[in-house]
Amino acid sequence: MSRIREVLVESTDPAPLVAFWSQLLQSPVAGDDAVRLDDRMCLRFATTDVPKQVKNRLHLDLATTSADHQSDVVRTARALGAASVDVGQGDVPWVVMADPGGNEFCVLEPREEYRDIGPLAAVVFDARDPRAQARFWSELTGLPVSREHPEYASLRQESRFWVEFVRVDEPKAVRNRLHLVVDADAVPV
Image 1 (tube, rainbow, N blue to C red):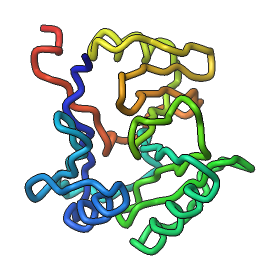
Image 2: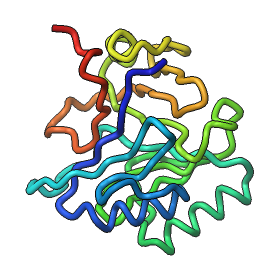
Image 3: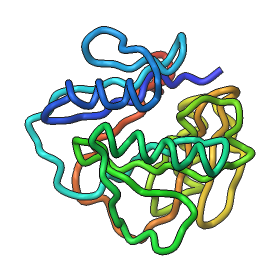
Image 4: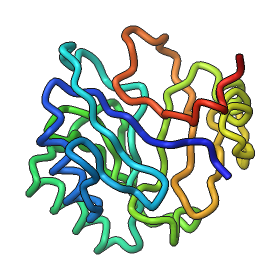
């Protein structure tokens, strides 16, 4: 079982993001600051006074079941206030967007590995060394490394979103606005 408790998103104005993600994921709001992903995990929004400055090093990937479903999710995201963005992705089969707070996310083309896990396919980290990051997070979360390559690595959660690491050359420049929160007993002392 995963020790991940929540995905935390910092924002200067979290309330609109709670509404946006609840509607886009078709998931209920939990309290004033979270969207329930399932009975044990949520997408939580916290207030920060630091505005977004650069592309996030973590982002969410959304699963789709068909080309029509992908188009519907993109259309819904735009109607809720998202915009298409170019982060240098080139010609790819997924659509890169930003939520009303500027947080990047991808609406993926249908992929077999993300079937039947819900609308959130993956939390994706930019990493200088994907395999090392996957090993670190595997130890911390108890999730197995399910894919490993010099350019990417993945942790698999049963019936839940994947945790993925994709190689980038750029070093981290600012503090991450998105975080995985793990249970306190999972953190080594």
